[in-house]
Amino acid sequence: MCGICCVVNISNLQSALDNAVLGNLKKRGPNCSQEVTKAVAGFNYHCFFSGHVLHMRGLLTPQPLEDEKGNVFLWNGEVFGGLKVGSEENDAQVVFDHLSKCTSESEILSIFSAIQGPWAFIYFQADSHCLWFGRDFFGRRSLLWQFDDEEKSIMLTSVGALVIGTERGQWQEVPASAVYKIDLKACSLLDSLVLMTYPWKYPSSKLQKSDLTHELRLEQFSSCVSLTMNASGLFLTAPVVPLNIAIPACLPESKQTLCTQPSFEDLQPFLQSDKRKKVVHQLLDVLSEAVRRRIQYPPSKTVATCTSVNKANVAILFSGGIDSMILATLADRHIPVEHPIDLLNVAFQLKKPKKKVLTKNTKNCKTVFNAHPCQEEAKLGSTEAGDFKCFNVPDRVTGRAGLQELQDINPTRTWNFVEINVTLDELQEMRQKTISHLVYPLETVLDDSIGCAVWFASRGTGAALLNNEMKEYTSTAKVVLTGIGADEQLAGYSRHRVRYKMSGLEGLVNELGMELGRISSRNLGRDDRIIGDHGKEARFPFLDEEVVSFLSSLPVWEKADLTLPRGLGEKLLLRLAARELGLTASAVLPKRAMQFGSRIAKMENGNEKASDKCNRLQRV
Image 1 (tube, one colour):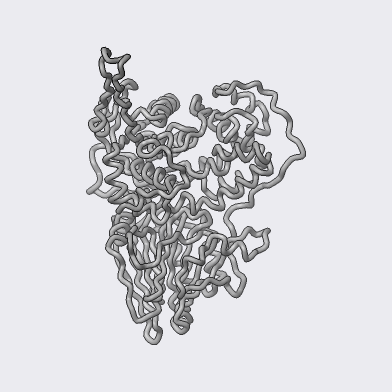
Image 2 (image 1 turned 90 degrees about the vertical axis):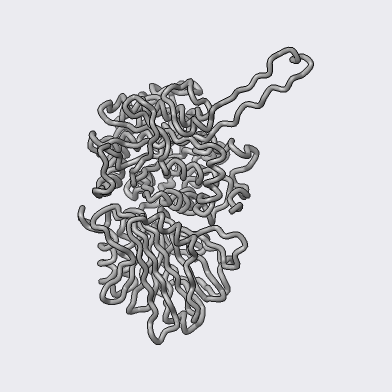
């Protein structure tokens, strides 16, 4: 994880980097910061590069990287496959070395087409006076842009800052539908910015113009910016296979008689089919490898950070639901048993019950109060279910149950169940101070709820049971695993059931086809900015290219069966995988969205719609 930024202008004015933006970038990359400026004699353009490094693998390599040719490279990503990176090598340097050897556009595109893993990059190619930038196919790393008419400039950054009343153009997320190039030499002569696009494309599909612009809100561009398809018709090759859209003429009816609240034992009959069991184990194989890739090179601890206590290198956003339980169980396979794993469980303070109002009929009765010591509870958790009721939210209850399942599977592992309790006062303080700047430019009630929940959870500050005593605890793990991508691919959301009831399998397939196409703009950029603010790196095993390709290759009825009850039919394939891993009650827990499970959605205004604009994010 790094904070990367570039400011380019084609006027005599030089743009300054806002201090708030610089501060947010430094929090993403606390290990090293430096800057590079490029101004080429005879051409009226200026480039300012700022890099802030979170050291995750190989040698600490300051950014921006620069070579003897004058090329400059900023990288926020991880190479998990596609390019060979040794265990002691730095992947930013490896990618830059490949780019420096490129002599054509197609060679540059082939490198980014080959990389497996999340990335956002900015690359100045000196000999051609071109600036390249973009995000990976899923948009797993954040990159924002902002245009300025007066200065004729573009600013690219991992994270921005919300400034009410500013005259500058608004920040937008760079769409992940393409990689972009600016010919700075030509633009300085034209006195305007022209963005050439190089879109992603499945090898078997035809490139259509509509594919290039559906994510680009051109009306919000400044007047000095235009967008055009590259003249050569070049494209990046999608790193995953297209979604299988096959629809059967008919499906065999289920012979299972199930109650509305299924038990994990209801999964066993589905595993009696050798064909289905084979598919389940194929999923486990690719998903296990995806987890291994993401935890195989834990950041080396310096002498200054080492303590006598054995700290976890890996943390998991943990609700006790099926997605986080599977990630924890697979991580347990690949992390040495003497290393703890942090399970980060967030809960927002429940509202106190209202005082009973005295009436004539109750005049002689005692007034009942339900006083909860919430401020103290937020500091320290409890292992007893009867205590600290202010924070006994659904995700806390299922999280504790999930912890017990994990301890049963591997009792020799130290599982640090970190109870992260958030009061209303702390939520409002940190939203105004920090979180609103990270969620921006997104602005809905849902963005606020998820953004706040993920920020507090990934910070990892709470309480954990250490030596049979609840103590204050802060996770120092830099790697944070999250289950994003499971629901989108395996029909886990309630909207998938609605679509299936209305339009059958064809409607469900169409809905799933839209999910991954919009995940970059709905979830991933935001969550990258949120988690990166703590100097930690979000990693998404369910969005590993091999996992997505495997799931996309399967017909929809092998992944889910929405004729079955909640807790069983949605994500059926994943539930069967959980059962094969030895999980029990968690394998049949129904989907509960994070904002409801953590109870943040009930904390301030329970009457809002998720899609409403959130006024609380604008108060800075």
